[in-house]
Image 1 (cartoon, helix red, strand yellow):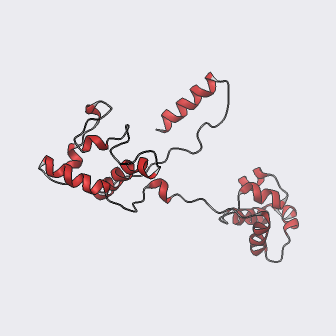
Image 2: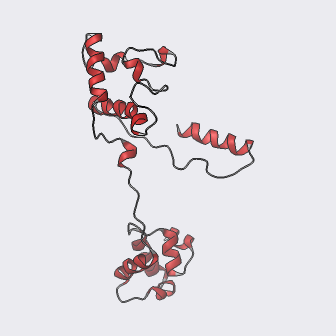
Image 3: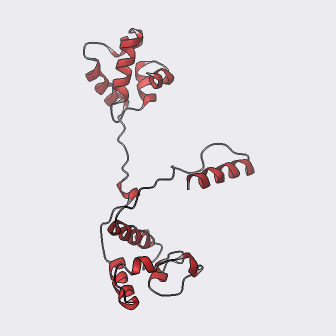
Length: 185
């Protein structure tokens, strides 16, 4: 997926004579290591159009594989869906499996998949960051950090970088040093 995304961005930027990022965030993935989690992921994907308000039922979304699992006509080539493995998890009898899968798939749930667990990191305001930095410095004033010996200064900068909520650029701004100095510390 990453290679496809990078290739597309390169093509797009070349075609439209632009530079820089095209997508908001990088592709993310996680391993599906249990059968139960596999079923939750399938249900999550099928229920996305309903939760997003672009479909009234899970089998209504044209681009979903859900209809194929239900034994209905799909809008894409049938060979793209190998539903047998999933349906056999519910029953060896095809009709019973489809019925049980449909019941499972439409069940109201609070399943979480990768992007549901991603939370925004809290960023400190400059004033909040200064307070956190003062805890690290103790008796030393913020303005004195850039004149400390390199070894001591780098220790302070490394400790500051470890504080959740303070970015390296913000630390550089507060200390009055270059962002590159903070990065290398």
